[in-house]
Image (cartoon, rainbow, N blue to C red; front, side):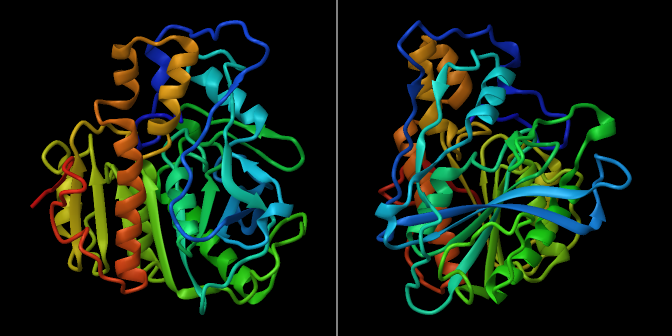
Length: 385
């Protein structure tokens, strides 16, 4: 929600050109809501504080190892005894709202479908894994609708904050925000290096090793539950570019999905594994780097686009911004500047259905018909040749 727009490390908050928004005086901030997942399984989640002791932080300077916050989402059972996780912690949410020109307490974070620390549900064999990378100046919660949808259908999903290009909070109370300027810029290659470390941590989790820096308790049943031979990845904007970069550099990722990634700097290496693009602003027609990348896809490939979508339309913006608009009394025109003309409810269904169909096909070999061509159920979605 409210994330930055573009993906090359020089993004500007979407609210920068808008006036400051003030919420009407009430007894307390309105709590936003998220649409629930459609899968058969309850969802669990756990946050991890990860430190890459082999890597100096590219921003923090000498003597500081790279620190990341990540979350693991998974099918769960016995969830009633475990609280639902917030979409974002309170202080980072205040920073996020303020960065986009809103009152810091305009709204309260929604609750997710994820129950903190609930036991892992084994749905028959090991669980396929999907990793998520956010866009520039964003955060790991930005595509929670998609993440919890996959978890409810039996996937383990690992999301990560790319520190200094994300808004987040560490267990010791440190709140981090994106640092601006060329000195602090993190590119897709930096994101990709973060993700490769996350892949190492996923191997640790499956082996029963706890990668959390504070050795906080992990959910019961996580050991031995992850299928390391069925790993996929998706990302939005710069995270979409990072997805392509990871797949070129690391064969552990078997299938990749880009949500309007600009593919800058231009990626010219061939990629022989399945890749899908959900485009909006960074289309092959408008962005030569995207067209160049497409020409190097040697395996299964697909490019879809929803009519009326803008850069952030395939994420939580579509569910949350219309609620925020009512609180701060946006006009219809101002709301369209945030979410485009794609109907929010339809956008949610698209981002639940298409990524699930893609990973089901390429990680589970479950062939449906949604990716075969235009579907009557989704008339907004065009298949680009």
